[in-house]
Picture 1 (cartoon, one colour):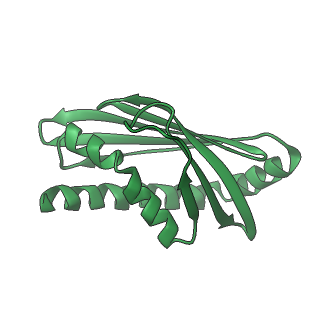
Picture 2: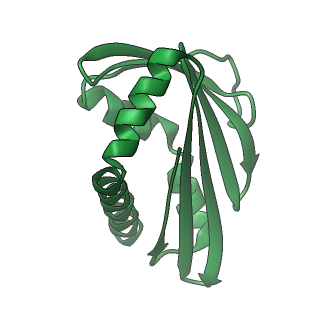
Length: 154
Protein backbone atom coordinates (compact mmCIF):
# COMPACT_ATOMS: atom_id res chain seq x y z
CA UNK A 1 0.00 0.00 0.00
CA UNK A 2 1.45 3.29 -1.08
CA UNK A 3 0.87 6.91 -0.11
CA UNK A 4 2.52 9.68 -2.09
CA UNK A 5 2.33 13.44 -2.36
CA UNK A 6 4.39 16.42 -3.40
CA UNK A 7 4.70 19.96 -2.12
CA UNK A 8 6.63 23.01 -3.24
CA UNK A 9 8.79 24.79 -0.66
CA UNK A 10 9.98 28.39 -0.95
CA UNK A 11 13.58 27.58 -0.06
CA UNK A 12 16.68 26.44 -1.99
CA UNK A 13 17.23 22.68 -2.41
CA UNK A 14 20.35 22.65 -0.20
CA UNK A 15 18.51 24.36 2.67
CA UNK A 16 15.56 21.96 2.37
CA UNK A 17 17.89 18.95 2.36
CA UNK A 18 19.72 20.24 5.46
CA UNK A 19 16.39 20.63 7.28
CA UNK A 20 15.47 17.05 6.32
CA UNK A 21 18.79 15.91 7.77
CA UNK A 22 18.05 17.47 11.18
CA UNK A 23 17.41 14.02 12.66
CA UNK A 24 17.61 15.27 16.25
CA UNK A 25 14.65 17.56 15.55
CA UNK A 26 12.62 14.61 14.23
CA UNK A 27 13.59 12.55 17.30
CA UNK A 28 12.41 15.34 19.63
CA UNK A 29 9.15 15.78 17.67
CA UNK A 30 8.41 12.04 17.92
CA UNK A 31 9.11 12.07 21.66
CA UNK A 32 6.74 15.02 22.13
CA UNK A 33 4.04 12.81 20.56
CA UNK A 34 4.71 10.01 23.05
CA UNK A 35 7.18 7.87 21.09
CA UNK A 36 10.42 6.56 22.50
CA UNK A 37 13.24 7.08 19.98
CA UNK A 38 16.84 6.04 20.33
CA UNK A 39 19.72 6.26 17.87
CA UNK A 40 21.30 2.79 17.64
CA UNK A 41 24.33 3.27 15.38
CA UNK A 42 27.73 4.69 16.29
CA UNK A 43 28.28 6.75 13.15
CA UNK A 44 29.77 10.19 13.65
CA UNK A 45 28.86 11.38 10.14
CA UNK A 46 25.30 11.30 8.82
CA UNK A 47 24.78 8.89 5.97
CA UNK A 48 23.82 5.40 4.87
CA UNK A 49 23.76 3.01 7.81
CA UNK A 50 22.32 5.38 10.40
CA UNK A 51 19.80 3.48 12.53
CA UNK A 52 17.14 4.22 15.13
CA UNK A 53 14.82 2.19 17.30
CA UNK A 54 11.39 3.59 18.12
CA UNK A 55 8.38 2.52 20.17
CA UNK A 56 4.96 4.16 19.90
CA UNK A 57 1.25 3.47 20.23
CA UNK A 58 -0.73 2.85 17.04
CA UNK A 59 -4.29 1.61 16.87
CA UNK A 60 -4.31 0.71 20.53
CA UNK A 61 -1.11 -1.36 20.51
CA UNK A 62 2.48 -0.64 21.44
CA UNK A 63 4.57 -0.91 18.26
CA UNK A 64 8.33 -1.24 17.89
CA UNK A 65 10.21 -0.33 14.70
CA UNK A 66 13.82 -0.33 13.60
CA UNK A 67 14.66 2.40 11.10
CA UNK A 68 17.67 2.45 8.79
CA UNK A 69 18.93 5.06 6.36
CA UNK A 70 19.54 3.11 3.13
CA UNK A 71 20.06 6.02 0.71
CA UNK A 72 21.34 9.52 1.31
CA UNK A 73 22.09 11.27 -1.97
CA UNK A 74 22.70 14.93 -1.11
CA UNK A 75 20.70 17.01 -2.01
CA UNK A 76 18.31 14.88 -4.06
CA UNK A 77 17.11 11.79 -2.23
CA UNK A 78 16.75 10.12 1.15
CA UNK A 79 15.36 6.61 1.70
CA UNK A 80 14.52 5.14 5.11
CA UNK A 81 13.46 1.54 5.71
CA UNK A 82 11.34 0.74 8.75
CA UNK A 83 11.06 -2.84 9.96
CA UNK A 84 8.70 -4.08 12.62
CA UNK A 85 7.30 -7.48 13.46
CA UNK A 86 4.89 -7.85 10.56
CA UNK A 87 5.45 -4.68 8.54
CA UNK A 88 8.15 -3.43 6.19
CA UNK A 89 7.86 0.24 5.29
CA UNK A 90 9.92 2.38 2.95
CA UNK A 91 9.85 6.17 3.05
CA UNK A 92 11.40 7.91 0.05
CA UNK A 93 11.93 11.65 -0.03
CA UNK A 94 13.01 13.18 -3.33
CA UNK A 95 13.91 16.83 -3.89
CA UNK A 96 13.87 18.69 -7.20
CA UNK A 97 15.10 22.26 -7.59
CA UNK A 98 12.39 24.23 -9.39
CA UNK A 99 14.47 27.41 -9.24
CA UNK A 100 17.28 28.78 -7.07
CA UNK A 101 14.77 29.60 -4.33
CA UNK A 102 12.06 26.94 -4.78
CA UNK A 103 12.18 23.18 -4.21
CA UNK A 104 9.66 20.42 -4.86
CA UNK A 105 9.57 17.72 -2.20
CA UNK A 106 8.05 14.35 -3.08
CA UNK A 107 7.31 11.95 -0.24
CA UNK A 108 6.38 8.30 -0.88
CA UNK A 109 5.42 5.97 1.95
CA UNK A 110 5.10 2.28 0.99
CA UNK A 111 3.76 -0.24 3.52
CA UNK A 112 4.13 -4.00 3.02
CA UNK A 113 2.60 -6.52 5.43
CA UNK A 114 4.74 -9.53 6.35
CA UNK A 115 2.21 -11.63 8.27
CA UNK A 116 -1.52 -12.15 8.65
CA UNK A 117 -2.11 -9.66 11.47
CA UNK A 118 -0.20 -7.00 9.52
CA UNK A 119 -2.32 -7.78 6.45
CA UNK A 120 -5.43 -7.16 8.53
CA UNK A 121 -3.98 -3.84 9.72
CA UNK A 122 -3.13 -2.80 6.15
CA UNK A 123 -6.56 -3.94 4.96
CA UNK A 124 -8.24 -1.72 7.56
CA UNK A 125 -6.08 1.18 6.38
CA UNK A 126 -7.09 0.44 2.77
CA UNK A 127 -10.74 0.69 3.75
CA UNK A 128 -10.03 4.21 5.00
CA UNK A 129 -7.55 5.05 2.23
CA UNK A 130 -9.33 8.23 1.10
CA UNK A 131 -9.32 9.80 4.55
CA UNK A 132 -5.80 8.48 5.31
CA UNK A 133 -4.49 9.96 2.05
CA UNK A 134 -6.11 13.28 2.87
CA UNK A 135 -4.47 13.31 6.33
CA UNK A 136 -1.13 12.25 4.84
CA UNK A 137 -1.17 15.05 2.27
CA UNK A 138 -2.18 17.57 4.94
CA UNK A 139 0.70 16.50 7.21
CA UNK A 140 3.24 16.78 4.39
CA UNK A 141 1.84 20.21 3.43
CA UNK A 142 2.12 21.37 7.06
CA UNK A 143 5.69 20.07 7.20
CA UNK A 144 6.58 21.91 3.97
CA UNK A 145 5.11 25.12 5.40
CA UNK A 146 7.13 24.69 8.60
CA UNK A 147 10.30 24.26 6.52
CA UNK A 148 9.54 27.54 4.73
CA UNK A 149 9.08 29.26 8.08
CA UNK A 150 12.33 27.78 9.45
CA UNK A 151 14.18 28.93 6.33
CA UNK A 152 12.78 32.47 6.62
CA UNK A 153 13.84 32.67 10.29
CA UNK A 154 17.36 31.72 9.22
